[in-house]
Image (cartoon, rainbow, N blue to C red; front, side, top):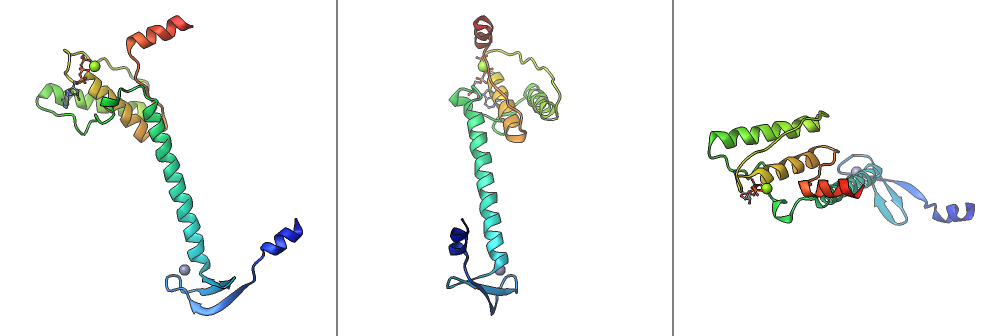
Length: 153
Ligand SMILES: Nc1ncnc2c1ncn2[C@@H]1O[C@H](COP(=O)(O)OP(=O)(O)OP(=O)(O)O)[C@@H](O)[C@H]1O
Ligand SMILES: [Mg+2]
Ligand SMILES: [Zn+2]
């Protein structure tokens, strides 16, 4: 092990050249001139980029597992059209509902409306809002799926 470590040790020498960014002397290591702080920043940035990427992958995985039908994956609060006061009221209640869940409360919400009036659109918006803005999980179940789950127990 010691021999291994020794072979990995590079001889580093301080040069007279300054890093244009950090104004500290560059080191010469194995024929390369580099700045310690630049090197540290590069490592830090690549760690941060990796953490971001993991976070994004986790989010995409959560969305894939949310039970939402594919056609609702792009339905959000942003593209819910408000054309009457009732829709304005509905979206505000749904946004507040999502926010309450994100803040750790356990509210209930019942959406009633004739077919095609945007109940599932708003439900998908709530689910995605929670997944994007918290570490909580959110899932879409139909009543038939819930009944099936109960019968399976
Ligand atoms: N206010 C709205 N703004 C934008 N799109 C809307 C709006 N209302 C409904 N839609 C769109 O119309 C379609 C039907 O809406 P949705 O499936 O949410 O209705 P629903 O109330 O769940 O109907 P159902 O009772 O049949 O389940 C969807 O594509 C949805 O995105
Ligand atoms: Mg629906
Ligand atoms: Zn530097």
